[in-house]
Image 1 (cartoon, rainbow, N blue to C red):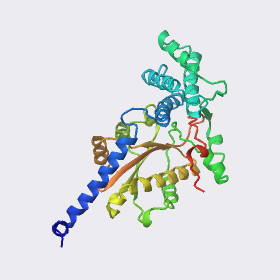
Image 2 (cartoon, helix red, strand yellow; image 1 turned 90 degrees about the vertical axis):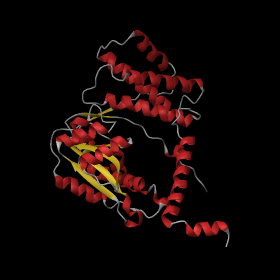
Image 3 (cartoon, rainbow, N blue to C red; image 1 turned 120 degrees about the vertical axis):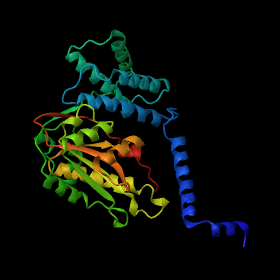
Image 4 (cartoon, rainbow, N blue to C red; image 1 turned 60 degrees about the vertical axis):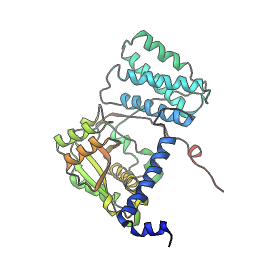
Length: 332
C-alpha cells in the first residue's frame, strides 16, 4: 500500500468531504472572477452590453413608476452615456438591439422631462443630446407601455403563446388585499414545477404584516419608488438540507428559479400583478432577513416577489428580449 493511500485511509470521511467541497468552490470562485465583469474590464462586447442593459433598465423602471421623480437618476445617466460612448469608440454594431434600446431610453428620458418643462443643467442636457447622435438611421423609436387591468389580463386564459407573451413585471399596485386562498392556489399551481429527484426544496413565505414588509424591502436593493405599494410580499427560500453532495451546490437556485417562474405565471393566471426582486445581497442583509422572518439556518433565501391587484392605469417597462437566434447554438 502506497503512503498516499495510507494517508487517505486515515483521513476522516468528514474531512475528505470538506476538502472535495473546498476544491469545487475554489473552482467556481476562479471561474466567476476570471469570466464575470466583476472587475469592470469590458473585455468583450457582451460584457459592455450587459452593463449597458443594467443601467438602461434603471431608467425603464424610473419612467414607469407611479410617481416618477423629475430629474431622477442623473448619476446613473452619466454612467449610461459613458457606456454608450465606449461602445461607439470600440466600433461595435450600432444596429445592435441593446445599443439601440439604450439610446431610445435616453431619448424617452429627455422627452419626458421636456414635456414636464423640467430644466436640466446645460452641460448635462447637452451631453445627453450629444450621445443621441450615435443613433443609427434604422433605430425605431420605442417607449415604455401604458396598460390597464383589462388589457393586461386579456390573455390570462388564452393559448400558451399568448399567455406567456402577455406577462410583464408590474411595479404599480392598488390597495386591494389579495386573499390568502388565491395565493395558496397560485403556490399549488407552482408546485407542479419539476424539482431535483422530486425533493421539492422550495419554501414560501407570504408577508402581509406592514412592518415586516417594510423591513424586507429595506434589505432588498431594487424596489425603490414602488415597493411600498405592495401590500403582499412573497419570499422564496430553498431547503439546502436535502442536498447530498457538493455537486448539488447549484440545485437550490436552479430549483427555486424554475419554481419562481411557475409562481409568476400562476399569479398572472389569477390576475395578480407581480415583480420578482432578486436577492443578490451581502451576508449582513441575508442574516437580517432570516432573523426578521424567522427563516431557519438550513434555508437559502433566493427571491422576493412584490405583488398586488392592479390600479386602473399603470406603466410597464418595455424590456425587449433577445431573439432566439442570438442566444442559441445549434449543434447538428
